[in-house]
Image (cartoon, rainbow, N blue to C red; front, side, top):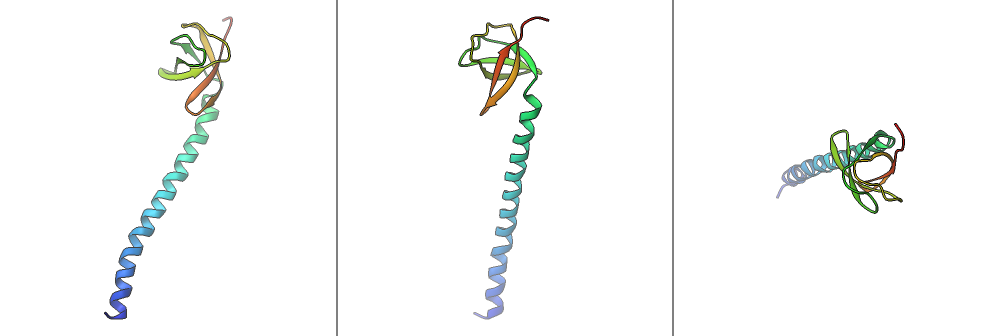
Length: 98
């Protein structure tokens, strides 16, 4: 096998692998940015308890249903405020008053 043929085969394999690695690294980078942007945008928003909330429950926030938890029991149909998160579960408190 000539040296030129071997170089051609090596290049034909390394180029697609290099492109795939770069695309994967970029996807991971974008995923991290999206997660980082998610947190400041949701903390502080208010919604409604769809179910009773304790260790786990559900709230409606901007038309979407979210899993939520609270340190205290919150009855269904009460207004809640997002104060944090863990994973994809939102930590909420009950809002009192208007």
